Image (cartoon, rainbow, N blue to C red):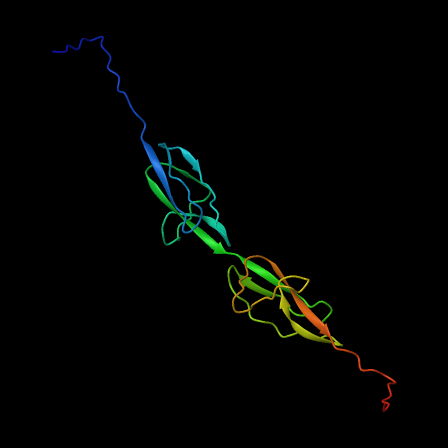
Length: 169
């Protein structure tokens, strides 16, 4: 049997608990689980998602309770990413024609075709992705994924001859 004498001191040995932060990125880039000791402050990462802006981490899947830029670990937690869809501006360069108002569109959306511009002495052919008028913009299929400029294409109307006389041969 172990004997305890009056001059024996016993010491407790403690091991600090470690906890995990798990991330649900909700369609964003993968964020690996982090492990740290009790009461550690974890600076939270910022994932990315094409067409969206990261709006922060939340304690709940319904995205009601934000946690800020860091957390202090006192237990295992799961955090959920919130995203705001990006909005882009589509400008219409009428290439010398009447002005056409810009449109706004959310990421990956189509836009409706604006009213065709007019230009004296020209016929409007359509809207194009490039200034040189080689690739048409398809308003039912093409999607807005960034700030965009769409270009008008024109064909000149031949001028009517003046002072011309018809002669019989």
